[in-house]
Image (tube, rainbow, N blue to C red):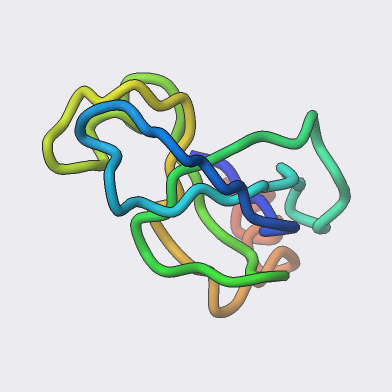
Length: 97
């Protein structure tokens, strides 16, 4: 799983079977500081994310399994919208371990 920010939409006139009615969004992967971390990618939206939302994504096989029916041809899927991200607390807990 990784974080990303929704930066746009993709309009597809034709889609593979199993993807009809699904929305595709452009997502910029980011790190925990919300700095860009990798190339922009197209992700299928499973949670009704919107512009500028910080989202949780899964890739590869997990992305294909995030949809019903599973094993559709996708490389990334949005599976959550982040309400809050507390990086300082996470780093402090990691240092204690």
